[in-house]
Amino acid sequence: MDAITFRFLMSLAASQNLEMYLMDVVTAYLYGSLENEIYMKIPEGLKMPEDLKSKAKEICSVRLQRSLYGLKQSGRMWYNRLSEYLLSKDYVNNAICPCVFIKKSSSGFVIIAVYVDDLNMIGTQKEIDDARTHMKEEFEMKDLGKTKFCLGLQIEHFQDGIFVHQSNYTKRVLKRFYMDKATPLSTPMVNRSLDVEKDPFRPCEDNEEVLGPEDIYQIHTKLDHKQVMFSQLVELRSPGVRKSKLWLQRLQIMQKLLLSMKHVESVWLRSMTHHIQESSGIVTEKEPTKIFEDNSACVTQLKEGYIKSDRTKHIPPRFFSYTQELQKNQEVDIEYIRSSDNAADLFTKALPTTVFKKHVHSMECVVYKTCEKKRLYLFQGEIMLRYSFS
Image (tube, rainbow, N blue to C red; front, side):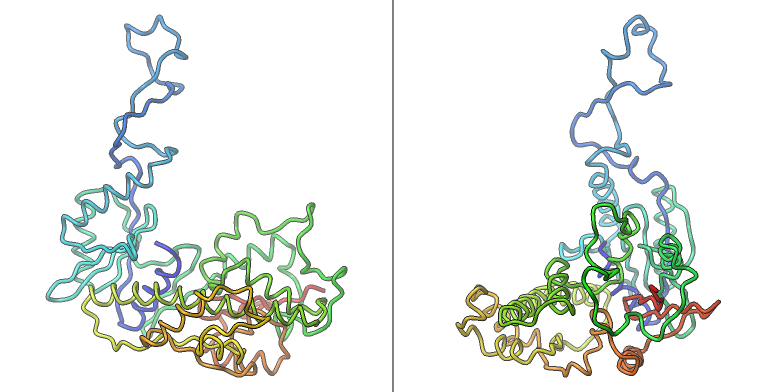
């Protein structure tokens, strides 16, 4: 299960007032059956049979009868074993989201979202209880109750909804870079011109430390742009880049390609959400997915089709034809939004305090905790740190 699917399932649980439980499979990979013969060296501590004690261990090997942790195919073997069992229990599955299994009954439904050995169960209480029972009958399980932590996200359950945050992860990152006692500011990024040589946010040098293994938790809440192109786009907008004609051309090309890629992603999102809702018996109105863009030239170009010019000669026409087809079929709707109203600027630009607070309010952000001059502002799917780097 990917993070986008999990976020959708959380939003579904909140909007439909569903229950959400977490179970852990004990030694999950040991349940997998091997499809091929696999041999391994004799591990230390294993007693040799009497007729082989005279031989050296180096020339002997053992044949595996079950999957083990460390085998490259262990994950796939465990998934095959689990999916085979769930399908035998009348769950349905789809290649669009292969790690989501859904079972519908006359009184409700249950969705089992699989992430390695963690099983998130979302649905009505009776169906979840039935699923927990038959899972315990087949596998050794740990029942962790309501989901409180998954994919680096902390989840708190309230009567009026679900609250998702990453406060523990944020505090660890701040402490690692000695920012836990920093002075708070009114905005997360200071609105000023930066000297590239003195900029603390310049590209990392060889001897500088980055987030490292903890960076995996960022992908579960960050904006879903294509990261390489997005970083280039941010670089083009940075204060140290000269605003030349070439700069403007590159900027528009990046924006058009990113917008086209969001069309492709929206098709998968629509397919995934439609499959889950339809299999669960949830009736929803089919409306086009809205994509907001603050570049009017990009909006016009993608709506009217490919127009050959100096600014588009490097973009294949297929990017325009596919997006036009999606708009014609009313699957996607591109809408122009003024830059002053574009809430996505919170994550890409250094904004004045008034504009920052305006976007915070428009995204319905909440303050999770105020303690010792530290504030964590949590957004829908993103965390912004309000700390000074002085």
